[in-house]
Length: 135
Figure 1 (cartoon, rainbow, N blue to C red):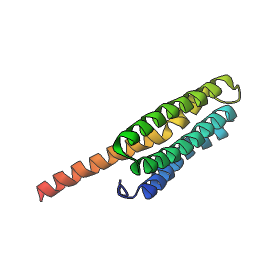
Figure 2: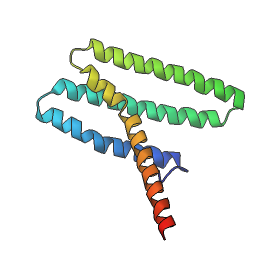
Figure 3: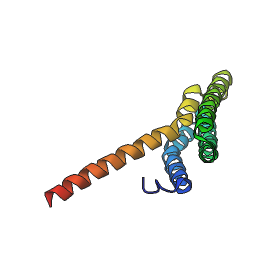
Figure 4: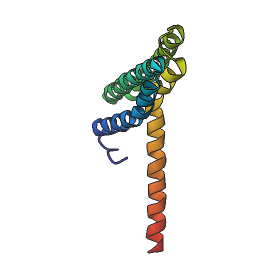
């Protein structure tokens, strides 16, 4: 991850890659006429984007606190975040116009992209290290 020292740029990079990867399932579900899958995926993706922004704001806010109060603050915010995950998945399960599985995948799409970016960076570093040793 190139912008590890600038959280704002890193957040934009993560969202850009997430939206580019998300175009594939959105376009394919639209082409096949599966509108409930499209709505579920977009619903989960929008909520995931908002939760990423909320997490960024919470971390920035916690950095200005004392260590003990920041730990409590972040821990409480994680419980709230998991409650929001539950509400989103519960509403997707109860709504007939949203596909539950697509909403879950959309909701966790940013996490998948962050893991994918980390694996790619790890492989790049490993190959670069091997290449440097070979020289």
